[in-house]
Image (tube, rainbow, N blue to C red; front, side, top):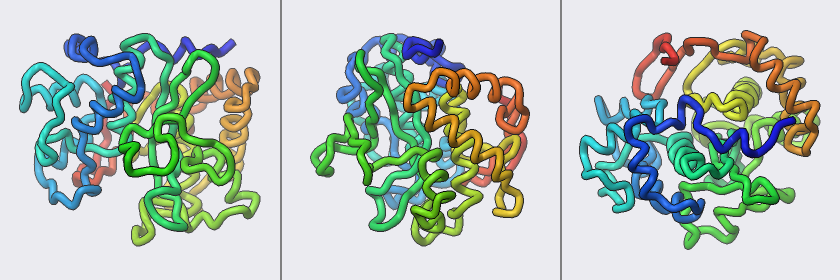
Length: 290
């Protein structure tokens, strides 16, 4: 049986390694951790700062230990003090979620990153996004560590799930697309960005599965059945995984077990020992997951 406690232990991506003492300093509270993380990470394109070269390459850090190593090269051994905006870790929503999950798991609070789409960045558009889900002792709770509560009308650390929800998982977006409830062309990186549509949403269902199975990979890592065209998309596979993810979210233990089995045994779903990283940093290469 799958229990929340399985998510209370580090994955290879959230493990802080030699920087574990830094996480000892952080509180065992998602709101306070999120506030700290907002002072550590700057979005690589969200603030209008033209990051280039080695700074832009920080978006490919992938591992919590590497993120913390980069931070500590520039700042003293403390995570609590906000860094100047231009000197923060250059990353994205995935990195903010990863660090938050790492801090919560460090305190043995069950937490996982959730991959999907947010409705709150662009009017009428669902933008790809990663948030945090943690177990509060009774239920799983959505929290977006990138959001400052003062700027939003909903509780950013206990986000509503009723329709229309601010954040929708990739599996739900895909299912809504397949049933004709949404226009999938209004789902992607942004309203003016070409990365959108069915192939993009289908890839995100596979990324959602990987993150659920504690492989918190980059949003520009590609593997298995992922594609860059609608024609290359395995519709049946994505339909199956999306349905299992939604069933597991609703407490179906058989679906959770099937997801674990499929992910462990199907090379279309599991990245194995390497991924093809196609990064905004310019990196386009096979990368070993070690």
